[in-house]
Image 1 (cartoon, rainbow, N blue to C red):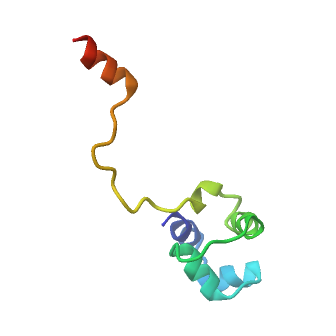
Image 2: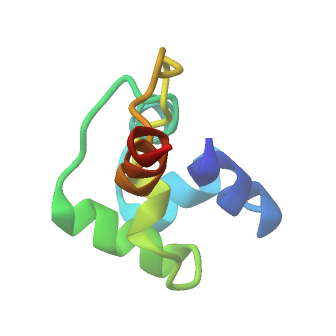
Length: 82
């Protein structure tokens, strides 16, 4: 997950990040693993601790690949016109 990579790129452990944020290490572990939601305030502090990283890091990973994803409108119109 992007949160883990961002933390590890800074050479920071979960324990160090937890201390910086004032939370238990298990909170870091669960949020990074996608097993726990967090507050906007904690997300802001987390991003600041990682050097002002994007909130995109907090998006959950896609667990399912879309099957038969719909084609873009332009592609559909081209096929219809042909």
